[in-house]
Length: 502
Image (cartoon, rainbow, N blue to C red):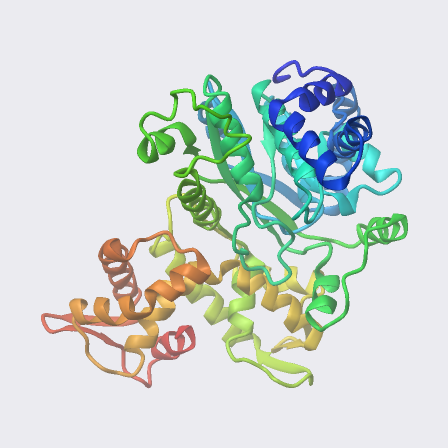
């Protein structure tokens, strides 16, 4: 429950600076900057103090009831899915938790949920923009260690940070970091940034006696705390720096209802078997430490693992009622800022149809789909001020609400990508065999998979496609015979649903 017994912060800093890679970096930096070795050592020590966490288990115990009250006040519920699998996943391994990054609250949410399930609290890599007075120290006590947004060209800082990560893993500390690098402003998973993952894997090579397991995690909010700020940034405004003032504004915003939060644990990625695949003799000590020189084979390994992680995050997607409602409301792109209205019965029909489709066709074994009804979902969206309902027969949205809904639609866009591709091929009332349909979708699938991080390889697309076609046929959206597949008649309501999906 407590995890490993980590040394005190000053001891970890001392171990970090004694690493051969840091000693060499100090020597090189002193020569390059024309400084004395002693002064360069002080610079390295200041870097280590800037980075290092100051984790206190006592503080974690004290803050736990505070967080419990916070979640209960702000959210209707906080649910951890597949949490019962975690203890077995991490048994005998050092866990590296890799969630998607939606909000600053992510830093607090996952450690809290792990602690309530008697699992070790991970030390979390946080951007140094959060290292502001008061909050920076509080986060350090909770296990945050800080990383600069960029340290390109500063090899001394890179060596210190790499050594600190390796020191933590050598002691068996659980870690948490966001492979996207920053919060997604659009709701889509961002392309992975491989710096921290590369450092993790190199540290794993140095300490093979402590096998690593990477655990992708999907976090889904029905209302994101910073969503209005994201819209402003997408509209061209500059990002506001974190400060005590912005912290206070965030605390004020917590008074508004935020709906539900879902945290879903993905399939684990065990690192040692992947190392074995790329380099069977990787356990043989190298002539030079991996912390100093990256092995040639590790770059390709890191690239593959990064891709697997973000795909694993999407694989564990939670399709919330707000995400599904956003798909039902935003079926047509709107270019102007005027308020738009749509009939309630149309939205409910689209919502229910998409919900039935996702229940009939399972995107993945880990994917969770909301059970909330269409009527309750509309009521929840009105409560969260994502839509308005001026009359009982209409749902209205303004430009800001459409921007917020678009964010939530993007969180589930990858789940509907393959059904949309099928609908696009068949909604034109043409008959198509399974083989021809597979060939047409395959032509564009590589781009879809690269953008949305879909879980199927091109050569393995036939099985999920056939399962999807059967589900669409069972729902009445498609007809099939010996010659192939065809959409239902154009005057039928099911065809309208298929056309909107396309």
